[in-house]
Image (tube, rainbow, N blue to C red; front, side, top):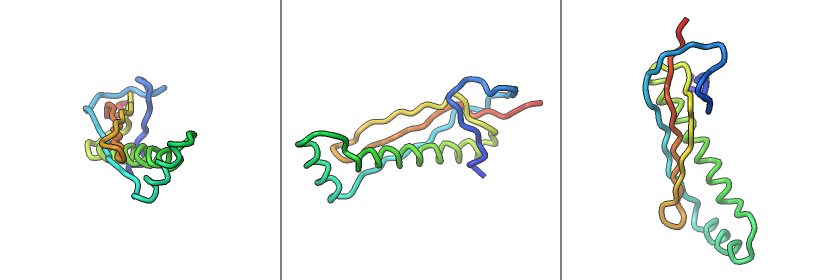
Length: 108
C-alpha cells in the first residue's frame, strides 16, 4: 500500500488540491561488511569509484524512501511533497540517510 503514496520534490502536485497533514520522515543507518570495507580501503589507495559504497548509499536511499512512504501512509496521506534527502557518515564505515517531506491529503 505504501508504494501508492506519491512522493515528489515539488511543492505542488499538478491538478491536485490538498491539505497539509504534517512532517514525515524515513531514516536508516547502514554499513557494509568487513570484507567490502577492506576492498574499499584498497580502492582508496588507487582512486576511482568505490562501488560498494555507492551501492550502500543507493540501498540506504531506497530504504529511507520506503520508510517515508510508510510514515505518510500511517498518517492517512495521499502524497508527500517537498521531499528532500540528508545524509551523513557515522564513523568510517556507516552512513545515515534521512528522507523527509510534508504529508498531504488530496481534497476535491
